[in-house]
Length: 578
Ligand code: PEP
Ligand code: MG
Image (cartoon, rainbow, N blue to C red; front, side, top):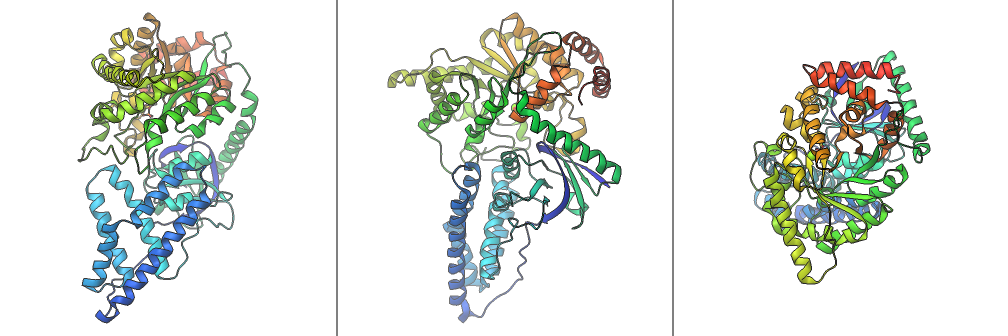
């Protein structure tokens, strides 16, 4: 039995046999042809390219328009296929160096990939998977082989891979795949996006995964903890079967929670909201019984797109979202590109050694003001259709908040000049994700209408622990006393100035963490829609007065380990469901 830690990207538990998907299954030998055979090779190449194009087009049609993200990913592969530079380089290898068509394709793409990877920019690195996908398809067509069918599995299986190419991810046998684990990838990788959309338990960035499994391995994916267990022993299997049953029962009974109150045993009401990434998530928000959306991560609308998004296009999306939440709140966050999320138009253009500390979020928006104002105008216009709020990500201090607010004023001015209808009173808030913002929350609270604490980033920036680096995953502890103290400071500042405050990091959806948030005085939480039911269930068993005592002890604790111990004891005493 082997336990491997990774990054959790989609909740749930899967247990079962695996299918190993390799992204480099096409082996091509170095081979050359006689000069008189060059025209034959060029013809074969043209035919294979055409066939590949047709295949991708058919695939795009099959996917259907309801899966926008997947379509966008495949569309990028198509662009590569039609890229003039790539085509002429492959032809040149055949004409001038007399490479066989297969070898010309393989070598050209490999060289291009090497160049992309050496640039050390996530935008380019993410294109490598698209190129490998094209390489596979063209070479398989040259060799007259069928493209690998992850789409046809003999039985229910867990997919294990180094990484999935976009086509492999989109092509999974939906009826048979029960979970996904990959060695590479991140929260925003293709695999993660797809796993969440399909509701499959998934863990990515699992170091050493592919070399730890054998073809006949049984694997457990713990999408709640971000763990993969290879060849579990009998006791672990029994334990996890039980957890899987519990998880399934909870999912099945989630609907019952919809109309139940979210009130603690001593009568404190908590207002629960959802985090969303696309407007397609809205029906799940409504089904969960949440009061609306506490965090709309708008950068996901742009990821994978090949063209810019106009103001009207964005307006239509935000309007549909706010109309969809049925009178509930919609807190739109302006884009948070940079770090590990990039689109075509917002690559930093040069290598950043520390991208999480680099040109990210509001910094990038301020640098690209035209793009920023376009988004702000769209939000201002959509706001007349419901309870919209706008918040800025990664604000460092009041000075930066003022800069962002000034851009908003300019966006309003543009709309006034155009005679466009918009919400003059749109509430403007800020995410609290940097220790500087938390420490200076009192100043921010004088001008910001509301706060939303992003514990995911607040943890990484306070503790100096990269949230995507699996080597320091055990140090990533949002329950650390220093994080709790910072949050307490923010709660005080918000209260003193009568500002609305919520928490929208992953901690907000974690029933284990809940007593800490309650004890800190937080009453608004925003989480992924499937978590609403379990948080509601958990809070109904808690007394706020007990949580207050817990937080006092936790803040005084010397390190995260002691807080963990206190919290575990607390749950035992409270006889909670965990
Ligand atoms: C956070 O940092 O806690 C947060 C909610 O933002 P994101 O996870 O999108 O960085
Ligand atoms: Mg964040």
